[in-house]
Image 1: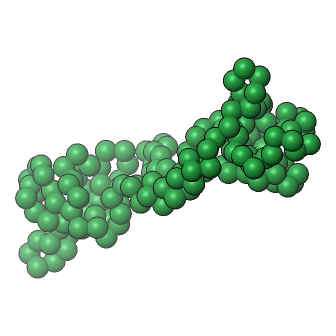
Image 2 (image 1 turned 90 degrees about the vertical axis):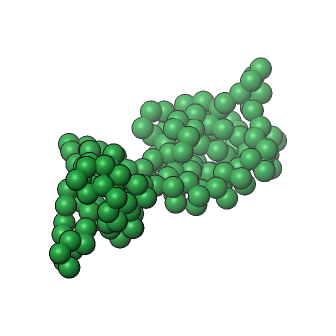
Length: 159
């Protein structure tokens, strides 16, 4: 069995995967957690690693090929010269193995020790607490034997 790419209709990736799985077709739709800023607030959500594409594993002689194009959410089979473009197994395995590494490279995590590079607190060590809007962050600074919550520009933080 070989991996192939399908292009899904806009905003219908999850729907296409669900219908493919209902037909017992092996699918791979990699998603990663992404931090977005909407209306001044940070939020995390899952987004496709390859927007618009789903990977399926089929034999070339499988009768399911005829059903792929009529599957809800599927737009077309990615092909060249009217032949579906095969994707090597090791490429898909590498993507699967790398998914954890991609997730780890998010931003600064709450509780992480940081250093301030700019402003009145330059050179001080601090503990990151949370993002405060698009361009600022809340950090804890040890000052006068007490931890103080301070809002600083994100550009002043160094992990």
